[in-house]
Structures are given as structure tokens and as C-alpha cells.
Length: 169
Image (cartoon, rainbow, N blue to C red; front, side):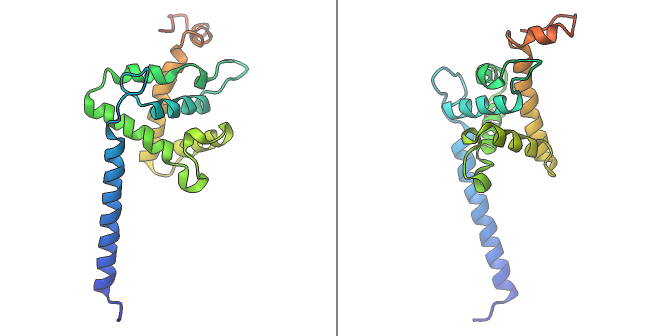
């Protein structure tokens, strides 16, 4: 059998359709997972990812000796999700799952299972990615988690000394 242009087009369409169907099934599975113990909206896996993400994004430093992964910022985001409508909340949850599975093809582990230096490399990759959608999604999550980090009762005094207008939750 000779391969014709029609065969190539048919195989391309089939491959594209299979990829779209797979993405749809995976997205539906991530869409609205039930809340885990201690959360109103986040699942346990989403909480684990957020703690890992917060630790990688906001590690303890000499200036601020508090690690974002140890400050229960997953609960801060869970509270923030309360203010969002259902679709927005579900989209944030899909984003958390998508980012957690992002490193799997290359590193063979979910983001939350990587060690801290690898997590920091992945976050750096996201925030400098050539696709603006990836950069914006990662930066949005960095900022959202950062609001919880900078206003946390153990971290806020470090920022309050820099801002005389009052700072914290």
C-alpha cells in the first residue's frame, strides 16, 4: 500500500482527536475533586502540591528565616478559593494538577515528589517559559501564594518593619 497525502491527513486528524480526548478525560478528572480532610475546597493532593510549591518559591533565607512550605499556605489558598465562583475555583484546581504533573515526562516524578533544588528549577522554568500562558499561570500562582506568605503572622513582622502603614492579616 502506498502512503498518500490523504493517509497522512487522516493519521494527523486521528492523532489530534486522540490527544484532545485524552486531555478532556484528564481535565475532567482534575476538574472538581472533593475536598480533603481539613480543607473546604482543596483535595489532599492539591494541598501537598501547594506546600511544595510554597517552599520552592519562598524558601527560608537569612533575611526571613521562614520557609513557605512550613506555613500552611495551602490553607490560605483554600480560604481564598471561597471567594471565587465555582468555575474559577475549578480552573485553579486544574492548574494545580497540571503544574504538579508538568515535570513527569522529563523528571519522572510529580512536582511535589521532587527535591527542593529540582522544584526551584521547575518554578524558574515556568516563570521564564517561552510561552506566555505558562509564564502567566506560574506567575499568578507565585503571587497568590506570595500574598499568603508575606501576610503570614510569622513573616509579616519582617515586612512591617519596611512598611510603616501596617502589614499583615
